[in-house]
Each structure stands twice: as C-alpha cells, then as structure tokens.
Length: 181
Image (cartoon, rainbow, N blue to C red; front, side, top):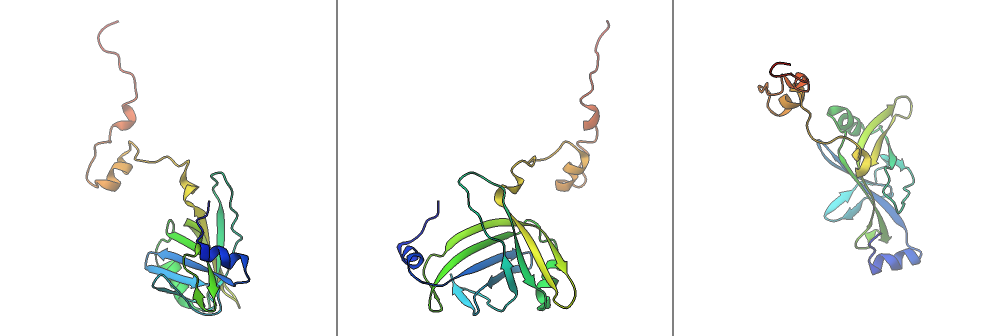
C-alpha cells in the first residue's frame, strides 16, 4: 500500500504534471536523473534533466510478493555514464524511483516511491545513437537463493584467506565403521 500525503493526493486528483526521480547508487557514487526537461531539486539533491535518461519500463504493482524486473535506458552521448558502468561492478547496487508531482518547477512534498531494487545487469548498443540499459530487479530477486556460507575451502577462504578448516569437509559425510563386525 502506498503512503500518500494529502498534498500529493490533491495533485493526483487535479491536473498537475509529474516526473520520475531516479537515484542509482553506483560504486563511484550516486547518479541522480529525471525525465523532466529541467533539473529537479528534491531532498537536498539535484536530479539532472539533461536528456541522458531515455525511459523506463512501466512499473506494475501487485498485492502479492513478486520478483519484478524493469529496464532503465540511457543515452551514452554523455560518456561519463559509460565510464561508470564499465569502471567497476555495478551489480546489486540500489536503484530508487520516485514519482514527483510538480507545482511549476517545485516538487510537491513527499514524492511517491514507485520502485526500489537492485541492478542485475546491463547492456549497451554502439553506433550513431549509443545507448545502454540497466536491468533492475526487486529486492525479492534473491529470495530463493541459498544464503550463508558453504562448507568448502573456497567459501571459507573468502573470509579467512589462509584458513584450511574445511579442507576435509567433502569426506566428512562418509560413513566409517568402528570396532569389529
């Protein structure tokens, strides 16, 4: 259920414009974009309306828990975004999408949070109009993934590089007979 303030409720019922505010928490720092034709200030941050954001998939809400995925498309005419995407691993970085209702160029307080999820991958297209798209899945995307650590040397050495505590774990499940038959 969405928590909507009275001011936003009035804006929805009247003829106010809206825009999307997208915050992507890349490894190098947050990127703030909007689909408005001008920059939008919200929560002490400026979301850039520089035309880099080409669009995003329609966001569908359901009453049950669902593992949805959306794509957010960008133009790569601005090379800094390409450098950010290729510079380091961006998978599992947080993306938040708000719908902000506007009164002129001002955001009506408390935009509606439409989506919050994690980057699952990206792809790019080169040519006359270079572009890229990131795939973002809801936080439930890893719901069925086995959590925790495994009893393998590799899993142990991710946290303790010199530890060989699980070196003989593969043979520990064998049945050994003690005594005489």
